[in-house]
Length: 175
Image (cartoon, rainbow, N blue to C red; front, side, top):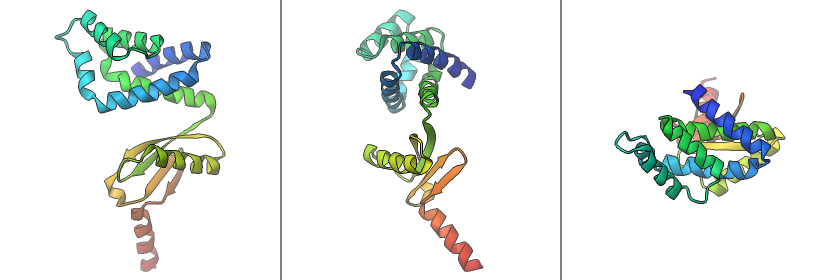
């Protein structure tokens, strides 16, 4: 799975790097990831064997009107090759490749509820200062935290969750 997504992602990344359009591409890719994750039925429509490719192509042109043509062409190729289920993975890999190119650290921020854009931006800024590099955090919901957040970047864990504090209190009481 990862290998398939990587091949498509590397192709788009290479084109956009050569065109010096990584900023614009990353912005569009992030929006597409959100939209596709919020609308899984759309992936099912593009993956349907009941629709001919030409019909799917018209849907893509209509839905993605205004999106960069290289991205639209990639989506069409992915649909034509029956790889639609990898579309989000492809876009996430493109985002990672752009981050690598820029020296941006990717990480995960775990929380009990989805974080707002403002909260995520504030966390990104705080962690960037600590890491001394820009960061790009992805929010993951983990109800086991009870409250607070936990950030994981490479081997570093910044744990401000209530669960972590309770575990520390338990350990200190047992000593």
